[in-house]
Amino acid sequence: MAKGKDKKAKKDKAAKKGKKARGAAKAHPVSPLAPKGGFPSLPAISGAEFAAVAAGVRYAGRLDVMVARLAPGTAIAGAFTRSATRSAPVRACEARLAMKPDPKAGAAIVVNSGNSNAFTGAAGETSVAAVTDAVAKALDVPAARVFPASTGVIGQPLPHERIVAVTGDLAAGLAEGNIELAARAIMTTDTFPKGATATVEIDGAPVTIAGIAKGSGMIAPDMATMLVYLFTDAKVGPVPLQRMLSRAVDETFNCITVDGDTSTSDTLILAATGKSKAPEIRDVRTRQGRDFYAALCRVMMDLAHQVVRDGEGATKFVEVAVTGAKDAGDAKKVAFAIANSPLVKTAVAGQDPNWGRIVMAVGKSGAEADRDRLTIRLGEVLVAEKGMVAPGYREADGAAHMKGEEIRIGVDLGLGKGAATVWTCDLTDRYVEINADYRS
Image (cartoon, rainbow, N blue to C red; front, top):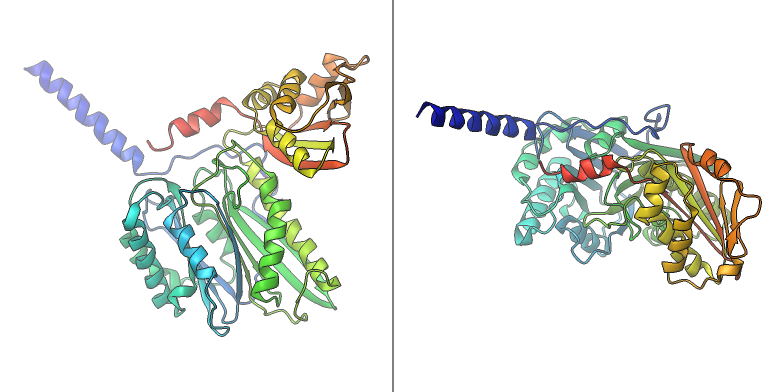
């Protein structure tokens, strides 16, 4: 009898310990590839205010809800996951972007971490309505102009009442300088908040862009590949803004991969408040449009690279550059076949210049390739050419390149002018640990 009670006491103690552990967010070591200077100093964007609070959506005591209030007249553009099982917030954003807004209306963004509100049936739509209605009321903007997002565990009902309960606190905390708090509130398995900025002069007047992102795992190109929020004071209408964003996405976020898995919740929103004194940008083909577009791409590429550098368990930042393909499509096929190969990624993690795995990935890609025209380089080291190992290649030279934090794999197919560059990271045992333990 005493033994039975002892066993029960131990079991109860273990259960309580497990429950306590689930009540707090697990800390992950900051990625060794994180920007050395930490979160950048982002400029205030006139017409955009931010706030973040701890609502206890999944974990106690951490920022997990953020809002951004956008000035009346703000133009909004967006890009979203093409997953067939995309979340209720993604569907709501898509529907709201399709509407014709009152040009004088304000807008808002609301994001929670800890729960993705994905694969939650009709309850997911109920949660979206409850949250966006509460934010609309607290921030005095139309509900149809509140753009929601949720990130975290899939398949669990969102405790939206916890978010609704803090909308007053969010409204009271709004300030232009709170964008870093917003960046921290949207993190899940991220090990550092991500931000980037650029300024460009348009006809002598400055235009500023600032952006934040979250993303660490479940990252693959099928836009978006994470949560990304971009803010600018530029004057740009919704139509040219959307055209620029859609084009820039393919050059940046759709060129990265961590693990080949596309999330159900990926969302990218670009908001242009129109508060700059620079003239309106009506077309990307104008000089003003080209200058703004280039600055936008710089911010998006910076954030995209930060996501890869924070890949779950990453220790290496890897660039895969493919040239000489029949066309750009084939170049991208080869680049992603290499970047997504577990065998290539584990070789990189082990600092092993196993170029045979690169040959394998080229061959399986589905792109046209010719063994005898293929050239492979690790950094500046010529590894293979003309269907075999390069005569002057030394294993020690390849291994030396693999020891760095930044790895470059270069492949020339020798068939045409198609080229593509993608970015990825290595695959380590930490990736397995993080994802095997994600819901516990």
